[in-house]
Image (tube, rainbow, N blue to C red; front, side, top):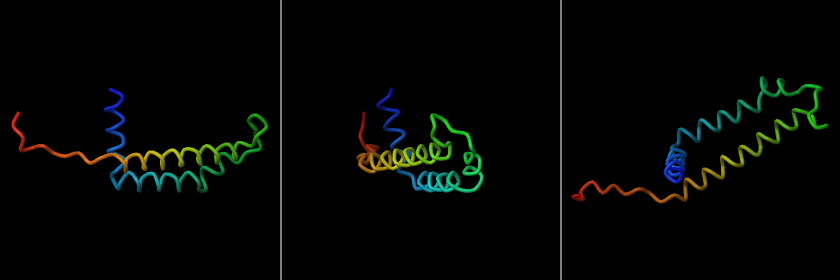
Length: 85
């Protein structure tokens, strides 16, 4: 099941719409409402919450780019519609 799910996710990432959605989501996450939500004097593990938020966002964006490169390397499916079974 996992290999099929992996292939399905990577095929979905080939779509141009998914690129646009992730780009817009990234832009929204790095703008006014979210930055002010995490820009508080509170600290977690003696690290400002805004810094943690930005670092996690950076790591997630790198992971998404990694998934896109894997999706591009995935070979194209060939339809064998004319083949008799």
